[in-house]
Length: 252
Image (cartoon, helix red, strand yellow):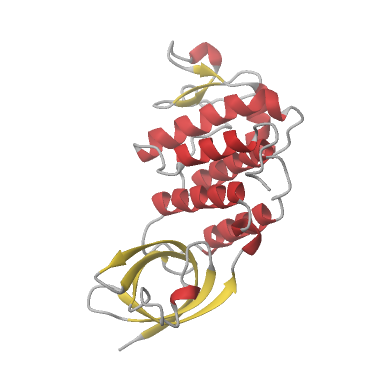
């Protein structure tokens, strides 16, 4: 029986049989993996607490008949600050769901793994920021993940004439991508220069003015790429909306 050891970011788990779990993880060497954790539904399970979603762990796996089986797990990072605040928790879950949807097995990509773990670490340092500002940053992180995986349309050259795009001359259509406004179809939406600048560089001086446009754009790309919305999308909207109400305690 061969054994492998790898770092892993736990994306999701589901119950299998009476006491087992099937765990979906992202790894640097093997991409997305579906592994079995035997007996972890039991209250006496030693590994159960180290195999929760949104944990970075050091896994030891043994080859099983259908899926690899967890034989050891050491917690590397719990991202505790994300778990203590509901808005950050939901945003992290949304990000991990996106990662699961756009990654595949046998995808050797340490850079992607480091990118996602780094994003979670950065989000853990932003828990005191306003919910709307965190959502703005989350959308750009989604854009970066889509770009890394080859799903984001080019924002540098027009999809029609292949000439460079300037920030003040961009339109977007889900089926065509980013194009010059003069070459856009009637269904295409004009993209604000501030949105283009934020996606390219991450710097924004007018968050409130450009947030709605950025959200519509990124969600349009996601829906077109994934064929359906993320399951946590509606929950994210509701939680952020509640957090922005006067005297709300949900973000504290």
